[in-house]
Amino acid sequence: MARKVRTEEEDAQIDMTPMLDVVFIMLIFFIVTTVFVKEAGIEVNKPEANQASLHKNANIFIAITDDGSVWLDKREVAVESVRANIERLLTEQPTDYVIIQADVKAKHGVVVKVMDQIKAAGVDRISVAARG
Image (cartoon, rainbow, N blue to C red; front, side, top):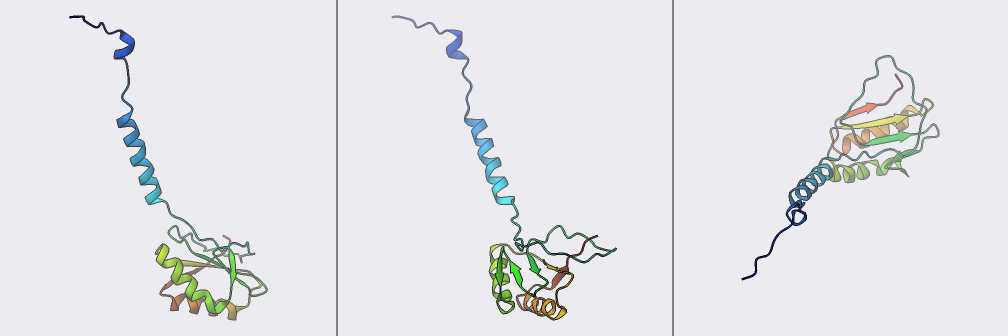
């Protein structure tokens, strides 16, 4: 009976399976815990405030420009359709806060109409963004 002699190179193999399992589990963890922020899609000139605070868990932003146009999720929407769009975004990713980024020259009436649409969508915590 012939006996096979093993060399050191054959014995020194690393099993990659446990490392790949850990990397795969970490990838799944980071995908599941990622928060996607729905930005307004336009930059507005926000008013200044001394007592401005930051809400970390807000992920829906609505922008109102100086001419009264409303931007949500990187597209312009009508004031009347804000409620439906907020409800759609809430089914994708529930949140407690919605932040309105109104321009300094935005009309107060448009801001109130947008706030009313947000309340009708079921969000009770609305913040108006300002520069601190």
